[in-house]
Image (cartoon, rainbow, N blue to C red; front, side, top):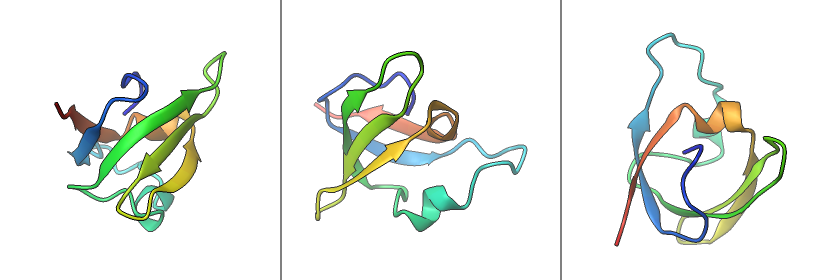
Length: 76
């Protein structure tokens, strides 16, 4: 998810968890496969990204290291 363009719609397709180091909170927050999302804002200097996701338009902040675990695809 890190590096995904702002204000573009995307979909979570899976996780890069080969080393089993992904934080559980990613799943607990509801960032599940098939979830639609968009990046609202990326803070400067590798700060958190603000993500809106799901039908309820939930909003969270994710650190770049956490976003690196999430595999996404861009939707048209």
